[in-house]
Image (tube, rainbow, N blue to C red; front, side, top):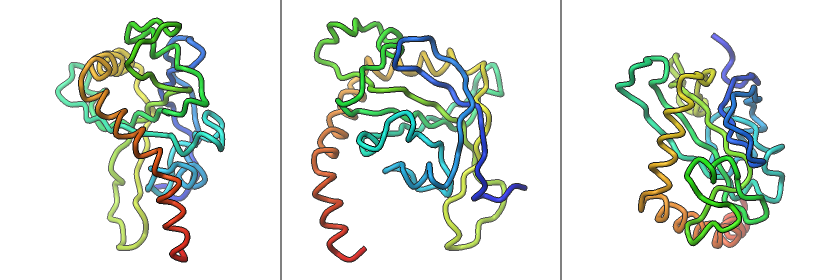
Length: 188
């Protein structure tokens, strides 16, 4: 078994902001990636710094997905969709096309910003000693799951859950600097 702090490379699903089609690419999972992710709490995590830059990392969001009862058993499991809501990043043209939105006239529904990444994860296969951190095992994204995830995103975007999710996240982002300032002034 590998060391849970070890930097690894795994295949992930990328929905590129530039409008290209979804594709599987290798990405690094590291402690630095976990530390840079404002919602990350695992020992290592996918390193998104090159995708979002320092000024937009605070607007990184993740959505967990549990996939069960699929014809292709390799597609079953836990996934995390990492995306961004920062207006400093361009609209994700790939995802806009996927959900049927004209990116030049997006309407009132918010869209993803910058590249979006989907990783497949699994519980750490060994017992974790108390206080040793939150370890997660990451698996290569199976090509058979591309269509499945695309269908989920379309349904999610067209649901009230997407609008409510985005509204709550936008409000949280507005107050995050004040929360961080108060937290840091407490000597942490």
